[in-house]
Image 1 (cartoon, rainbow, N blue to C red):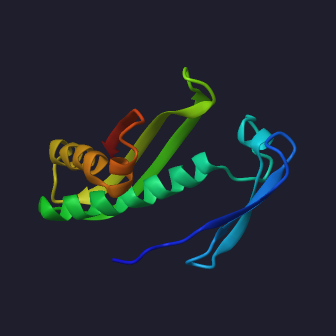
Image 2 (image 1 turned 60 degrees about the horizontal axis):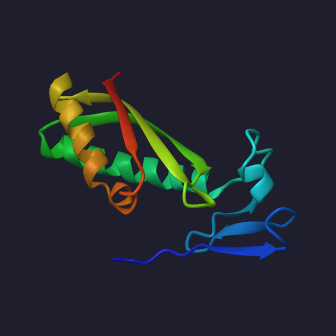
Length: 145
């Protein structure tokens, strides 16, 4: 299996510095990051580790769910997946991810709602990104469209 690479160039201190995250393997872009904007409600055009984790989680989850739907005998026509990744204070100091709220709406043929919900829960537990994030509470809101 392949290895994918990203890199960040950072200049300055935490409070006044900034950086750029480069999606190296795909060459698809470079995105600005800064801690003040990471900790603010308005990202003001910058990304953050939390947004990048949300993107990784939704894409991984969608792939895993489509596989599990197929294994259960269904056909996924569309899956709309979102993730809210929350940054908060760590009781031991600093910050930590305090939760991930996954949401999926699926248009699926050949599975009833109960089978879809079972596949959705299974995908939450088995997608590689979910496995990597086992130290974070992950919730799931799933429904057929």
